[in-house]
Length: 362
Image (tube, rainbow, N blue to C red; front, side, top):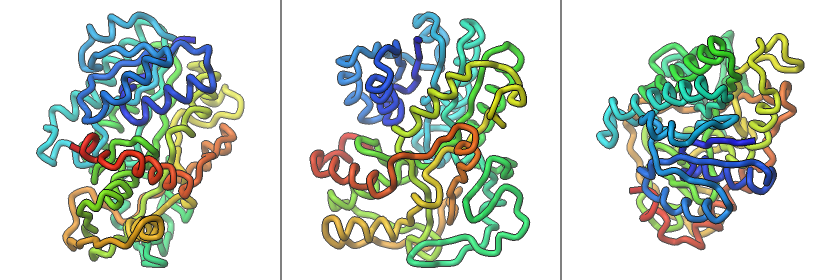
């Protein structure tokens, strides 16, 4: 089987390729990456040494994809992944749309042309901001927890389910992913190739290019270890906002099971499968607040000082945790790496690479 992984030199793409090489050595892996992300070049040479073919190209350019030739499946891990993208002055709104949506369209046309299946790695940030912001929370053990759940559709103490509203606003970034999901499903139905959508929680692990608005677990630990400035932003400045955590290594067995169901039949005709859209995360068990991360860092290394800013940023939310019970039921999937294992892996990497932020976070 021949797989194309987009964004292969990023944290998720490179981890996925390396785990594939370990677990499915017979798989022919091809990757494409424009190497625009700071630090991405670090992953290219190790991938080449494992036999992965890495194309320096851009999914926004059809001719770059055409030069690759046919494959059996495309795993789309290429994106500008920041929820602040398009408004933070780093990437323009047009760049965001071209990377995350036009790139997806080019990949779907590629799948149409070659009859390849398509797996989109999407995000928890496709869910409605206004609805999530209206959820009441209270502080317990230095972290927000939802309270008074009421009759909010698709929301429970287990987290946000796939049936939760995706009505805008969801952020410019989130909207590019929602649109990509919709187009992928439509292309698959119209042109007869299988499509799977996996909405991932916060991905984290050693070697991640952490930034304050993306890869927050890695960014927080590396910053703490390197004694870089840190801030609690918004929500009273206490650092109680919560996110879940997932290692991209745990995506591989799920995606390979989905690829094994390589059919474009309606899900009602596929045994044991109820949907083509799944939340994939560590769930409530993996959820941690920034304040809890700080306590973890203090125990691992030494106490530090975190400044506070009470004003919130656009798109910030107090509690975002995905409910992955649909994936568990349909695919017998659960994460194998718990949050403490992930944090320890990041911390070990930070100690071996004491200047990692200078490489990865520019």
